[in-house]
Image (tube, rainbow, N blue to C red; front, side, top):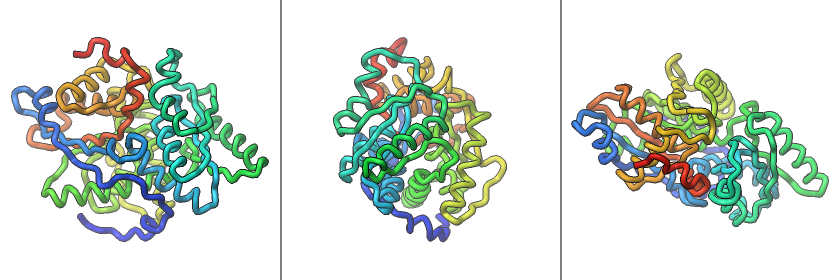
Length: 349
């Protein structure tokens, strides 16, 4: 790995809670299920579902930087907005609790799902256990409006003498959380170097694009040309690509460093997006079933199941060839399985 000087990377405030480094494992059983003739690529998974606190996931890495910034600014209250079954909010609530910070979660109505499991189980149950204060926002497709709503709440809290810190949703704000995956890229490259391995393509979820952006930015900053495919989990590729490119520029400004990117570096696919965010389709059910039955690996219907389904579609399409290696970044999300119940098992086998 070529080390590149990025002084800002290690100078930013950070609250270290993640269990790092996360492991890299072979998925040989999944490979044999997909390619019974033995002609498929090698499959690896980086277990970022095992980052430790609050059942793990990618958001632990991101929130280390947001909460570090919040503490440096003297905050006593954290505000965040996302979907009802948000892994981000669950993790934020737990990490805030450990730091003794009050946490307010604004739940956006992104998924047309009203059954009791979705409303009370999974991440929502864990949110309540942490003691987080829950709020609602009716429009699940209005990022700017959701941010304004939490800012209004922050103003009310300030009037009551609190010191709130808002973790924004829309891409108009600096992508502080993406720094967690710049560090993850450094970690991954070090692991591959130590193992004497090469990877030909990485698959990762692309929603807010913080994880996708940070990983891609970090790989290029540290001298790696490994292609990264961001699998769309919320919006079509035509919308997601520009979001990632914009975040790359903002991250370069935040870290005062500008890696070189080619025109082909930002790769996104919506092959497994289906009807949209949080909607379960047959390819997602297949991915959930294959991962569980073949590898004892649990992926969720909103993020990692969709990413694995997209990766499987591309593997079957020959994007990664026999003799090459594909790496799946498992970003967690398992608690939402308990909110989707039987809908993830329909036609699964």
